Image: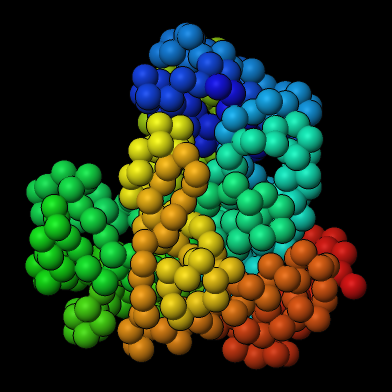
Length: 420
Ligand code: G6P
């Protein structure tokens, strides 16, 4: 089997390859091709990847290339992990948002809109090449904003796409740790979208442990920044264990103040971590996964990706939390909306578990965010200025049509977006 990694020059790549080496008995991938457009990065990460795999899994052939035809030709699985515009685009977007009093987080905030707008056309272009070069491949999308990008790919580019995020496995592992049980024994009744998830029930081998989990989470998601912790009364009232990104909605003011006070944007912090990682990769004496990778977000990402590939390849009928089209599982959203949901995974793909209706206490937010996301997909696919403006006006964290226009005009100028 052949795996192609689009964005193979990412500093994350060694993490992915480490996971592949661990799962090599389950997934007979013999060839991995790292594809990138950044020659130097690809060389630094690629050469390191070759050394690392020679050390831990010499039977897997690793190569790297700038040639997309060569990389995609006959691939069985394709992973996308690209960042159009690099971290500097993330920095500029989030800073401009903050300066205008808007949360600029690159998935959940208004900067997520900009990232989606510059990313979707690029990925749809790769999908066109895949039709010719690897028509049967599965595409595993990690590119953020993962939910929006996955919806665009499935509806307008590559039906065999499954979107991933490491947040749900992080939540599952958190609960397992708290209860002293195995991660695989924990089932989360997770409903919502990527970075907008509510866990309505936590079960361990089928037994409902939700109450206990919520009681012992106090103060929930402790951050050492008191105003960023929920009052436990709040999540007890909701009765749900919350994806951390919900804080941008439920504590919007506090988060905005916090972001304003931060001396650096997250992009600047990540750039520093990446410099450290790249200089480690460049050192020809190094051939093991660096410690510094843990300073980068995305914990367990290789585990999530490779478990998913194994479930597809081995037709496991295992439940994984993934991003896929709703298809009627969640009654409060349209059938064609991508949702983040537990789904049965087998060789025919992802089949979401029935979720029914969600509680009125969070239904509005869910539908509001989905409206913004679907408008964003339409804006990107049709290169439409009006749709883009409506998308930003519908973003629950933007609040003003004037501000939406100001942000949009900045994003267009900064990223050279061509909208009609
Ligand atoms: C979390 C999020 C991902 C994100 C990752 C890295 O795991 O769920 O969506 O890509 O962190 O974030 P960073 O801020 O390090 O780029």
